[in-house]
Image (cartoon, rainbow, N blue to C red; front, side, top):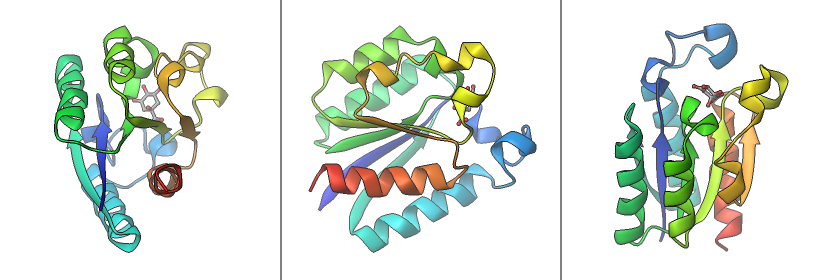
Length: 145
Ligand code: DQA
């Protein structure tokens, strides 16, 4: 069975509360249920984690490597635009990586158009609200087949 590690980054625990016009009404818990439902359909094992702490996100990436996950789906939140540490962690391990965003980062402020994570990702899915994660799961399933 394919094993996928899903990482939600900074402020994503506030989904359903923060800027609903941009990020939608669903809570992170509700989004995670949808991810788990889709994973079941695809016969994929998922481990889902969230952290507001950059180093903890780096530790999740190491954990994915040491526990033989096949791929990482990551929405780093604002760390997307700042974190060389997360970029380096992802390029240190030989796992497939898909970067995900709920909003379309290319249709927003200029500073969001720069992603350190894209440089080390196999692909990016941005702008489809919670469905970005569902699309990413299917894309990862195809990548690993
Ligand atoms: C986000 C986009 C980022 O620019 C922002 O800082 C977030 C969420 C998204 O999912 O659309 O926190 O990653």
